Image (cartoon, rainbow, N blue to C red; front, top):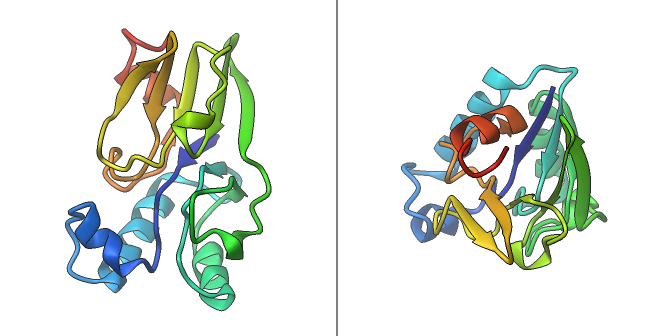
Length: 162
């Protein structure tokens, strides 16, 4: 199965305050996000992480990466992604005949697709239209700190998406 997530900000203390996340510490935030990830994602699943995965050193990144189920594909975010070696900025995919793109920043979406998944805005909005394209925020702040599938996106935004 294919999952999407973004804006996890593992190990980023200030994100708790900036986004009013319901955690008292980095340890609690990291623990909850790891638990929720692993409760949905199996070892043979793939997760596209659309940027801003963590803000930590390489050793801590590896610990977090290794504690999470599934194969991870990291896209470039706006900060803190030096340890992920993320080179991709945009991924284009197809689902039941619908083409869509995944990117970190909504400013980088491919407006030739009807559906686009992005992040970067945290909890500012869930879904919006940009140049006749539907943009769904796949950031963890919108999805209760869980990774999501395209089916979940389609179900939640059925009047918008498919």
